[in-house]
Image (cartoon, rainbow, N blue to C red; front, side, top):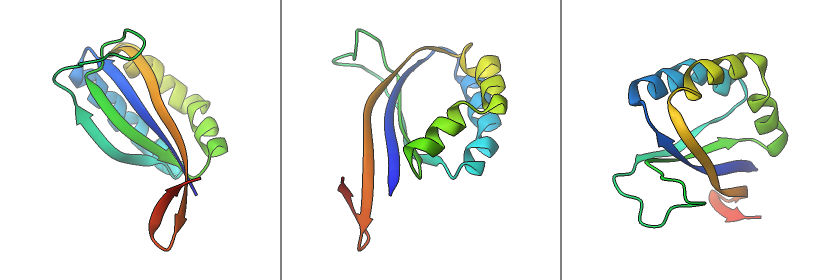
Length: 109
């Protein structure tokens, strides 16, 4: 099973946001997480919750508990405070999916 979130951000400082990604990567890997897709968006046609979005990605974990443990990890929270909070003006979770893998195919559970 895989637990995935489709996330939209309004990144206001690309260099600092990349520093955030670099700093959190080791912690993310410790929790078996990763990114499946990552897009820079040039135009938002229909904003979610009236928030501009210029970055969209899928982040995944084995399950919801692992994801919660990652986002509450003290080392991650330090990285988030140092880099994320100063490089992103808004964040929105666009979708959450629990995926079951059967015979190599992903099916929504």
